[in-house]
Image 1 (cartoon, rainbow, N blue to C red):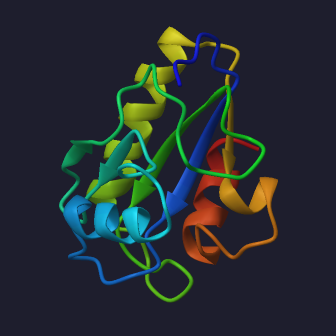
Image 2 (tube, rainbow, N blue to C red):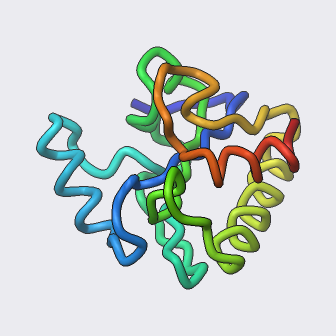
Length: 132
């Protein structure tokens, strides 16, 4: 499904090892019935940003909140670990890029929209300090 207006940028974590790849996430998502990875971008622990779904495609990110959102996932379990400085720099750059295209989009986390620990307390606190 194509989307036209973006009003939300949703941040996730993979809740897995920092070395998780987009291929692994895609496998998990296909096992859940998605046709591919649910996120538009995935950020590796070295800060590399990998493309997932095209930005003009509805994500499989948060049930009942996908139609007008963009989704990014940082690899790692931030309930336990800290995101790397490279991930945080890349996330900030990505959000800045998306906010240039969609200036009214709110930056939220998965847990802001659904009962979950995602994106983990350590990434959640960083996001809330930057995007209250």
